[in-house]
Image 1 (tube, protein in one colour):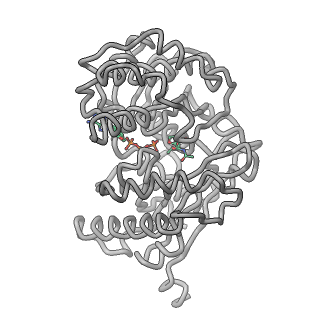
Image 2 (cartoon, rainbow, N blue to C red):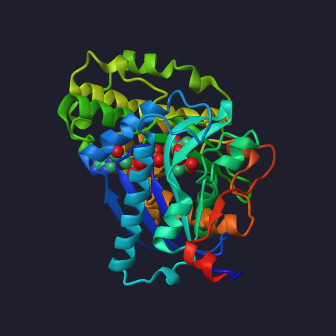
Length: 375
Ligand SMILES: Nc1ncnc2c1ncn2[C@@H]1O[C@H](COP(=O)(O)OP(=O)(O)OP(=O)(O)O)[C@@H](O)[C@H]1O
Ligand SMILES: CC(=O)N[C@H]1[C@@H]2OC[C@@H](O2)[C@@H](O)[C@@H]1O[C@H](C)C(=O)O
């Protein structure tokens, strides 16, 4: 297998705002060259369908079941990913053969690692057949089956980026999507990583309920409000924060009920502070306090969260864009990188990231029909 590969990563994250596609050239180890990217936003109705799918997934006991609206949601996820790949190829004048591998995350609808159950909808084989490019998918399953948390998966990629940038340790890479997750890196050691708490999901849900908007854009509400310390203390009393890592979260693990009586501005400020305080509280489980926090994911565009994070950590806080990476495309790039690691049989997860008993590879390879016919 050739050393450098061209990989396209596809991520539909827990905030369910849309799908990101990002191209990288990588050897799946220390070399990464970032390429172009493209996003597709889910429409209001599509988000609604996905939100309902999350509710329909709650009684699932086996990962192959598709109760209620899940089968329709899975078809939607597949169709929209294929649309995005088509748009990406057209926009960048590429042919399917220009891409060696696609890394397809799918949409998480249920995550119960203690029950060895994690469900990402999206049919990898159907996608490969549709786009005519080999697809690596189902990247959490092997880890969960082996007793790991199945998340977070991006730490292997954070590790490659921090090593390549020669950033002095200890460094924390904080991903703020729907849920927050931190990767702690210090030299060549395996990454220590876990989910920190909520990131944007509670804020998004609050905005949708109070204003009909999908997010608190540029923290317009949070910056006009004040965080309520009593409510914050109540939110921080959640038992998740006392759990020792490895640990990971379902999107709906936290409730915004505690901010119900606050004005929209104060509620948004309190939830932004909650995201920052719970992320900073992850220091409790790290060997040394990080000197630098690099923030990625949509939360890097929320100035209220960044301000609170500076205050809570007392350390350097920079966005991924500030250090020459991509805050928006980090996860999509990570799934491209992980797809190449999967093809090469390299570990995706580590005892220190998911609690899996030993470093473990993962992912399932789906070859497109035309490759199988010509084989
Ligand atoms: N300009 C902005 N101002 C405030 N918040 C923003 C802005 N842009 C994005 N966000 C927030 O970021 C969220 C999307 O983040 P991201 O794309 O990293 O999430 P994701 O990939 O779905 O999540 P996860 O990492 O949990 O899988 C949006 O739902 C919104 O809350
Ligand atoms: C089960 C699942 O999809 N988890 C997501 C979610 O969103 C953020 C956080 O919770 C993280 O654990 C994970 O995603 C990133 C991409 C990861 O696996 O690293």
